[in-house]
Length: 305
Image 1 (cartoon, rainbow, N blue to C red):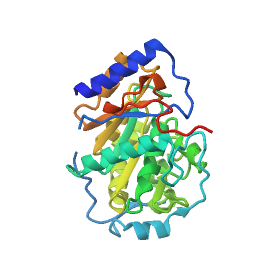
Image 2 (image 1 turned 120 degrees about the horizontal axis):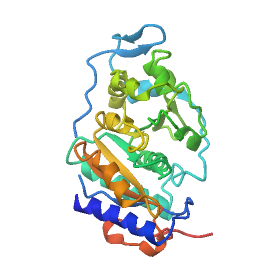
Image 3 (image 1 turned 180 degrees about the vertical axis):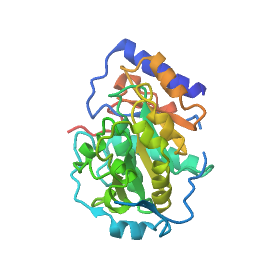
């Protein structure tokens, strides 16, 4: 865990010296030296029907079957959020996500790793930004099929990054209002799928604890190589800890110049027994470039116009 503490201390030093500007060109740094159970698919079963809930009538589908029955949309990626546009961009931001992607593949070669939770200590640290760009970067590999899930059921934002509808989504499916195929969207980058949050619910934690979220994940996961799940902040609500129990690993996002060391340590400690993969230091300043531990300044490898 020492490298994680180095990253958290780095964020505290950034915070003390100067506030992060908060623009897209301040790029994430990555420290994943901290290194899960393999997702288990149900024996059979279409999970949800609009009126009867769970029905055991079919096995989990292949990606091809799932893609043929899902909603196909022409997403318009928000240029203020998306650093990875479906191709192998040469910008510094895209390179950092390729670094993170490579690290995840290295870990996956040594242990089961398919579902990855993205969270942070507090709001506005960039977790949804990291989740969206990591999913796009993973999907840039032609042999990599990726599902991006908005699990922040209290303040969802991923649908804004894709300019996609928020519902129907996860909550609608889990409550039995629609089936699993109707809530998964696929865009022009045909190996990237999106499961939005769905309509607001009174108690998201109870919804997660009810067991149907796990059944939904177990049903769709076999069709994908990676499932990236964005969750609420860890110090705000209990949802991330519940989601972590359903995932193979956790990436913890820290905002340089903003997140206090105490909050970062307290937030990340929630996941020390839940396969904490590492810390992503977001919006690091150029002066703090330290390539040896995956710290990069905002202009490293970036071509300015």
